[in-house]
Length: 129
Picture 1 (cartoon, rainbow, N blue to C red):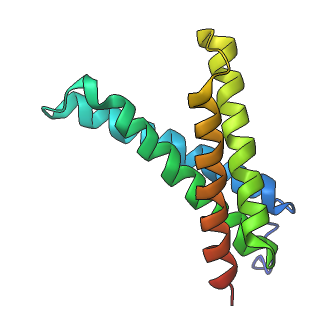
Picture 2: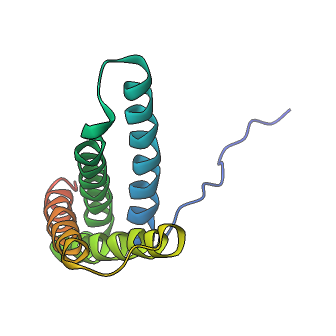
């Protein structure tokens, strides 16, 4: 029997799409962790919006990091666009599922998402070998 010399790997070519995938996977993992924290500890549900913002911020930062690392240049641009797309996607889901409207808080989320993604993208470009 011959050994397998090369295994085909699935790799997303676009740094933006791979960063978005990482960001949404991190969001799902963060949501699960916060849910378990609420279940197994004395944390009150009133602090849930703060934890939600932390999870979103870290997810966007990590997604920007991946996008910047994979792009190799203009990490702030790749990460910022990733953050904006993430915020728009979350805003659309909020509008369709919960009937949220466009307000100043949503625009602040968009600006914060752009900044977190841009910071992650800048650091991601600089960690590339």
